[in-house]
Image (cartoon, rainbow, N blue to C red; front, side, top):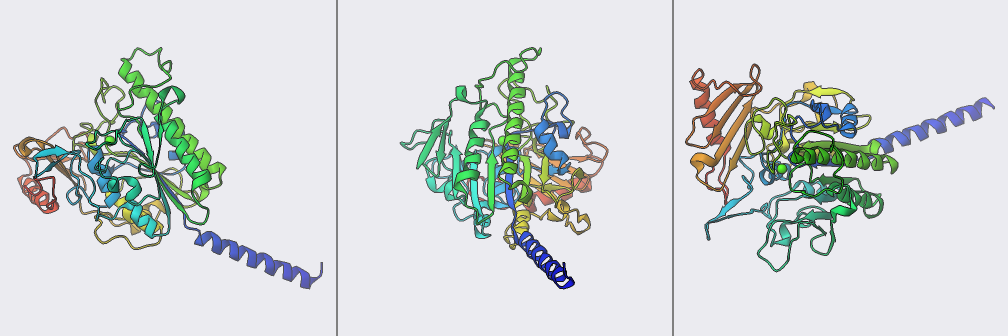
Length: 461
Ligand SMILES: [Ca+2]
């Protein structure tokens, strides 16, 4: 080979490398958001679970970053998902409980996201993403299709709808509605391992045949696992040799089968060659539950944390948060950063290279994802508020996490409790009497953090 030809080849190689690099840099990543329902802080092997095995998710965690102090938007489904979808914290979100009051009738019922609220789906659409949502939405008025996921920022939406509605449409809980009520498929438990296998099929179908190749995707998988709403499973032999109550066997089966489906979706992503360009998040909408005969203490579902689903003690709100992004997120990192569901909106805005919406209370955690921890902005404090359908003296719950400190008030009739999490992660010793100035400060912060919203009348009390 002549020297001239060698130089020409080297130059060509160099140009090709540069173009590939530019192409690689310009390629906007996909985002896959895996949302469990009522999965406790301690229900994954990677978060300390000893009995139920979650090898697929543990493998995912090993390949990414794990947060220890990350919080759901609230301690029950709808208000937590409202925080996720709007980037507003629980005192600013327009949904503060699973039911709100309608002033005209005095009835407590399901409240949808306001139609003028920009959702995470809307934001990602505006950023040039194709968006998809599969599973439990829980932010709609069942009678108003304009409040369903398909109308709220998702180009493709498969939504379960099992809340009773007043309309003529009959919402069977096995029905999965595709793009509004244009199409539907019924889930028959005898044909599948679990409902999340059925849902994962929608996801693989979406990735293979529905999404286009010219835009990145934002796919939210909203699973049914592990709450008690799935009473029937085909496989009853798993764990049958255990000396456990039937409800506990059922709980363990569900998590085991769900883990398998998460693994299946990740494998599919690898098969279609999208894994390397996808940011994958796994988290839960609130802490582990005790319902339908299942006791959250049986498998230590919430680790050493106090309380469970519905509580603003940490067992109700602290959740796993695993983030994987090949080549970007360093494997095996554990972060103690204090964050919450409102942070996903600004994080995804930054990943998509757009400005975060001004109204969000969240702070992007992208610096932590990328290992630039010195650039991470901290929250001054996190605030939660939950309103229930009865007397606020008993049912207005509020909490704050500020550094090592936690303040909790369980109804306005009860005093504010104060805990120092540094020495007392299980919130067992109320230090309110010892720190009256902190009680005063948190009372003020409770009031300052809660704004008026229709349907939840106790805000700012
Ligand atoms: Ca939930």
